[in-house]
Length: 94
Picture 1 (cartoon, rainbow, N blue to C red):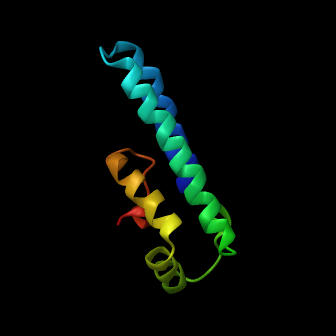
Picture 2: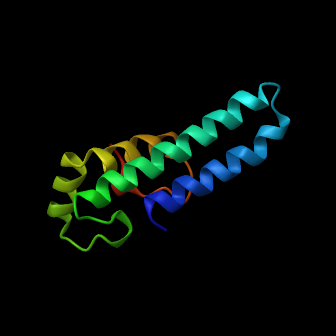
């Protein structure tokens, strides 16, 4: 599972839980906004010639990429909210 798949799965879970919230509309709007942010971050990363889900560089190259790619930094920031989830991967840590 890559970071984008992880985030989209967590957002789907959040949307399912929204039915129990009193401010359901605001929570669903936040989920929709996160989907747009994720899509834009993926596009920004792809425009730089990298595809997050298919990264094949060394650990050092990956660390440098995370630090210099704003799209990947955005995805990592969004994923940080779910750091206690069992599917969260340590390499996504900010």
